[in-house]
Image 1 (cartoon, one colour):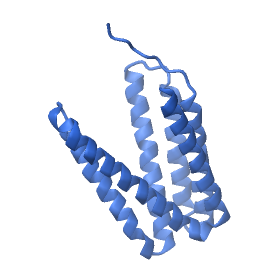
Image 2 (cartoon, rainbow, N blue to C red; image 1 turned 30 degrees about the vertical axis):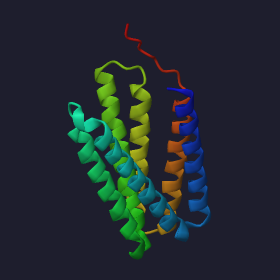
Image 3 (cartoon, rainbow, N blue to C red; image 1 turned 120 degrees about the horizontal axis):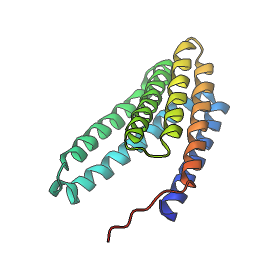
Length: 177
């Protein structure tokens, strides 16, 4: 990982922690703010991926996957933008489902890394399992919006700390001669 990428991951981790603190401080308004930030980030990532497809990957093998990814992420970002007019409980449930999906993706990536005998697969597996457990706890406490917000915020803080730690972890660089 390059120095610029490390700094970017640390800054994103710090922003996630700040967002979680705001969410804890203002649980009612924090849900809408979190959904707005998620929708904006998904929308920007979808546009960035679409531009990447148009400029580069349409000429590559398997490039259409980037187009599909861009369309799905753009759609998810626009869907999240439209959630601001519904009750906050549904917004919280949507955020928990997205968080659980992210944990499931971490688990699948860890299992794939294990297949290739990567040394960091255990860390990714534990991180994914913790994310899924937090999402399940949020669903168990579905009656209390504040409890969901606190659990979700704790999960965000955990994910941000993991992101910061992995930014400083040494990675192998393969040089092709």
